Length: 80
Image 1: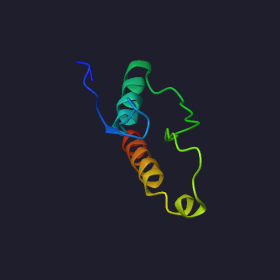
Image 2: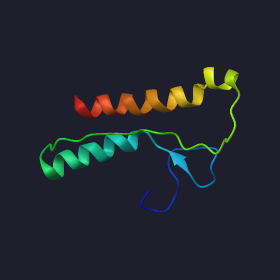
Image 3: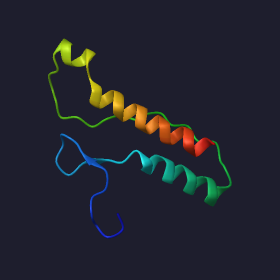
Image 4: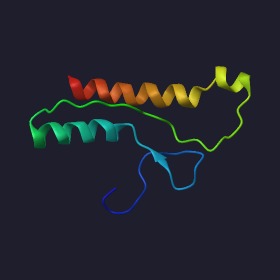
């Protein structure tokens, strides 16, 4: 945040935090400042330092599912 305190949830990479609401905040700011320009979002990735993931873990990756669900939820809110 503006006071230097981390916001969001920590992830597996030190000093990285996930803050899905920030996507909505950013899009609303751009919409207000630039009167609704077209925006193309090409990636909403989850930083992860796991180099090897077992097939079982790939099929049950709840962290990644939650990450995308949360970001898409805030994206939908910013469109409404």
